Length: 217
Image (cartoon, rainbow, N blue to C red; front, side, top):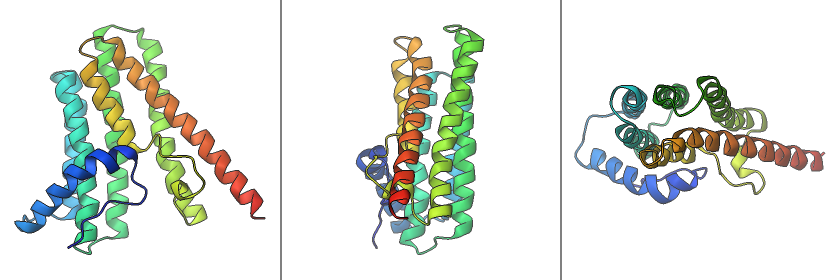
C-alpha cells in the first residue's frame, strides 16, 4: 500500500514532517487502529488548540512542541485517506476549516504570552499579531482561490517556491517558541517573520500568476 505526501508539500513537510507522519500512517494501517482521516484531522486540531492554551497556562516550550506535533499529525489524515482510498471533498473541507481555526488559535496564544511577558508594548504586539494572522490566512486563501478560479494549485504555476506554506509557518513558531526561552524578544520576532514571509509570498505569487495568465491571452 503506497503512502505518499502531496505534490504541493512545503519544504518542512517534504524533508521532515513526512518522514514521521508516514511512519504513523503505516502503523495505523498495519495494526488496524480504528481511526478515520476525519478523526485524525480532529486530533491534529485538538493538539493545535492545546498548544495555544499551553502558551498561557503551561510554557512556550511545551506549546511549541505541540505546535509541531499538530503539524506532523496534520499530514497523517491525508496520507491515510489516500492510502485507504477514502479521500472526499467533505474531508478536505473539514480539514481546511480546522487548520484555519488552529492557526488563529496558535498565533493568538503566542501573542497572549508575549503580552503577559511584557517584552513589547501591547498595542504594538497586537498590530504585529494582526498582520501575522491575516498573512497566514491570506496564504491559505491564495491557494484555495487559485484552485477554485484557475483549476490549479498556485504552487504549480511559475517558479516562486513554497516559502510560506503552513508547514513552514508552524515550524517557525515551533522554533521561535523553543529559542525564545533564551531571549524573549524572539517571540515577537517570530510573529514578524511569519507576517513578512507570508506577504512576500502572496505578493510575488499573485504577480507571477497575473503575468502568466496575461501572456496566455
